[in-house]
Length: 619
Image (cartoon, rainbow, N blue to C red; front, top):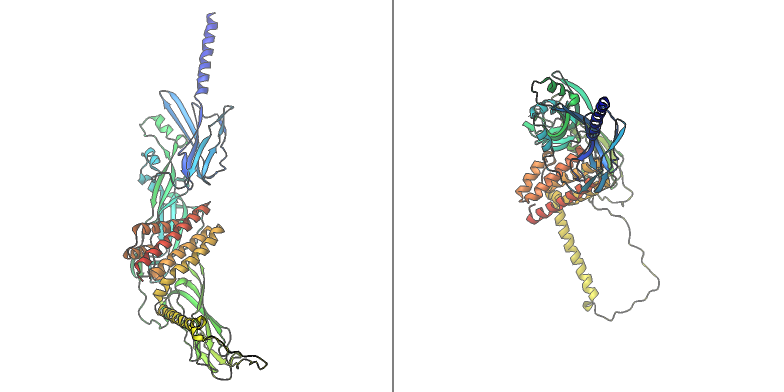
């Protein structure tokens, strides 16, 4: 009897232990925030806890149909021994971003442990417009990771800016590359905190893939994963020592949490990476600044036709005919090809003999931005001969400075001999006195006069007292006054290029904004942000009288402040430009709403600047 009672006690103890072990297993879901902005990311974790986790099998996540999965599943395991009591946990975490606004339910995750299925409770996420997260996204992670110093992170994660040369000539290209070096895990998408400033440079973005492709590189015996963040071609517009400011990124990273070592062998054992828990923190990485020494161009043996071009170019020309007719136009094309700042190439000077009129050339360009900036620029002149006879268009010269040879080089087109004959659209006389704006049909006689029967009748009213008489008298005077006013305005604009650009700035910007809207409707993010950025900078150049070669955000802001522009408007302008540049650098996966918001904001900025500058009447 005593033996049976003893066996029953042992069985009861085993049943209690088994029941306790079953009761101690939990599987829960948690999120970093139940209310998030439509463009914000959040973390969801599914954590299994118990005395033993070796029996975990087949974890199945819920459906994330209404969210984009930025990262995951990220698995972490932890274990604790307190007063001989063992507890362990395993977490599966995801970083998600909503696709649209609304209220969405994330279903249950399931997990099999020792043949039994566990599932989490569903979680409801409310997605709102705007931002609801605090500015310091990584504060909680930083507090949890207080035992990991910024110095330790900086040794394993940094941005390096490098230039392909440190000494260049004025106008010579220097290429700056920004690379990310990392030995840690990046949890999700990086945010641009501050873009570099290129004061004293003309900048051309070099095309890079939207998704960073990593390679490996060894530095001081340590192997890093390396990815190119950004490439830019810089053309210095002033001499001396110029600086390129750092690029700053906010990078969410995952780090393993280690325990404070107490010399206990068990503490050292559980510092093994297998048992470490992962924590996500937000780290601000800042690149180094770059100093570029810019040398002036040689002052000796400068050709007369030199107009600031630096690089390596070739030139050719084409003429539509060498046997033109009077008052009938023909074209002369000049093509410049090579490496250098194609956008800033000025048209070669065209000297025509007497008896020829020319229009302002039509300019077109094709630029390749994949490395060394290269391409072509074409100037097409429309020429009208006025006199019959033989004439010659002298060679056209184009000079540039070649940094490779450290010398000036001059290119020439061939001379064109012309044999001008009488045009078919003029009479027998010499009409060389007519200007290029006068398009008339000459040599026609009086129209046919009717000779048949017709009747005449005497009017009864005196014309002086009729309304039609005064109307016919006043209309020519009104038309003449309007014509004279318009002509004076056009002459004033023609003599003042800055005023012309100022008055037409808003119209040009409106045209480019219309083009950008077309790209937005096509969901072409790269072309949209490039076009809308050029529209805004072009508007500021023309409106603030800033030369293209000297244009920068800092200079535009200083000019607006000098014109007493509202500080809020200036800050809004800076924020819009920085967001636009960031979007060009890292376009969103679902950017339709972002493009629409950017289009509205920049449109309002241009309208408000237009109102501000118009009210001050500062031309």
